[in-house]
Amino acid sequence: MIELKLREPIIDAVIAKLKAGYATRVATINAADTQGITLGVPGTADYYYGRARTIARVPALIVTGLPGSQFTEEGAHSFNYQTLVAVYAVDEDADTEKLARKLDRHERAIIETLWDDAPQEALTNSAYTFRPQEDSLSPVFEPRDGDPAPYRSWIGVVFEASQSEG
Image 1 (cartoon, rainbow, N blue to C red):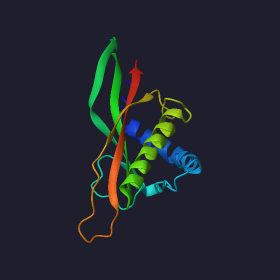
Image 2: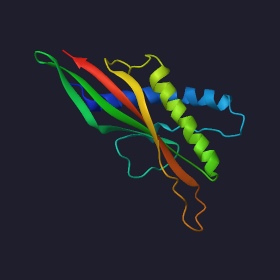
Image 3: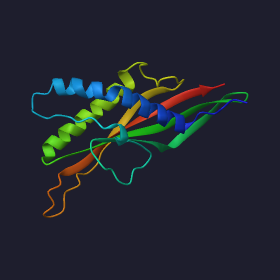
């Protein structure tokens, strides 16, 4: 009997790859900055599996599966598996333009880490190929009147993970 490795190990591999390479990508982006905007790196506890209800600190990265997994027949008792995984970066800033630039840079760091870092276009110790598909940006969450908290927002990158089981 073959052990099916569906979405859960994919998300675990995504988090592991981000933890291993995200800080290096952010350092490269920060070194090239000419606008005085420093992108932060999530702490070890700021990588979330699934849908986080509260986030203690930012920046934070949330990795979750999305609906739409596909199982297509490949042959006798084998199939191809494709699923979608989203990576969301949450950040904050008192200046909405700086926040928008931070989110754009987080998107770049996410894609470069997951797509360019070794193994390229794949997840470590996995037969899955991993490719970016689209992005999405949230509205800006404004602080309440009198609240000194900065504006918060997120950007998401959707990846397709594909694997053949046989």
